[in-house]
Amino acid sequence: MLRRQRVILDRDLAALYGVTTARLNEQVRRNAARFPEDFVFQLTPAEQQALMSQIATSKTTGRGGHRKAPWAFTEHGAIQAANVLNSPRAVEMGVHVVRAFVQLRELLTSNQELARRLDQLEARIEKKLVSHDEAIAAILSAIRQLMNPPAPKRRAIGFTADLSDPK
Image (tube, rainbow, N blue to C red; front, side, top):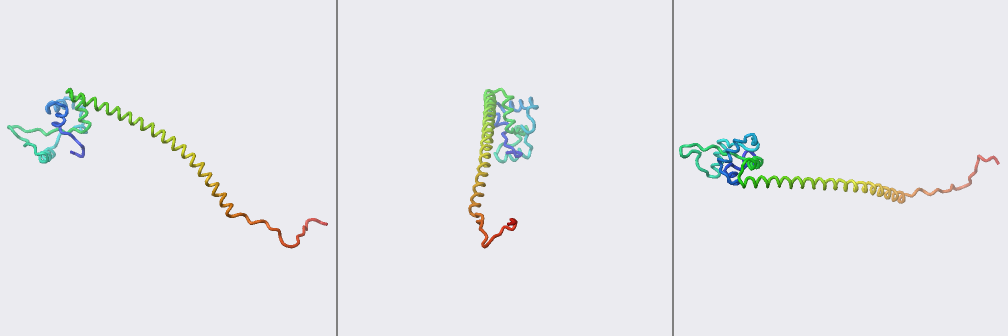
């Protein structure tokens, strides 16, 4: 992990694709427009030193020369490298990546259909719950009325006279 990204170094990617590191780096230089900074970057001297101490690689100088800093490829850069290389393994990997993306798109489409159907089911259940809530509220109201019956009408005790009738 470098610069908070998962990367693969040029020598490892070259071995994976069945080409030399020099050939991989040559193709990256020739196709620089296809490799923006978020696809591939060259290690700084500090990163290179930290990497050498972690994996115990040889010194940066040897045989009178100076070793160049390796390139680090992100996932996108590794896929792009398969597109610019012409080795059988790189071509195979490119085809594999395309097939994986097709499967992901199909999976996404099926998930969208599932989400649409789930929304429809939720809407139907919502309608039923509303009508059930109304029915339950009506039942509870009827029970409350039964629990508190109105006071019975009583006839007044004694004589009553209708004073509006002039007899």
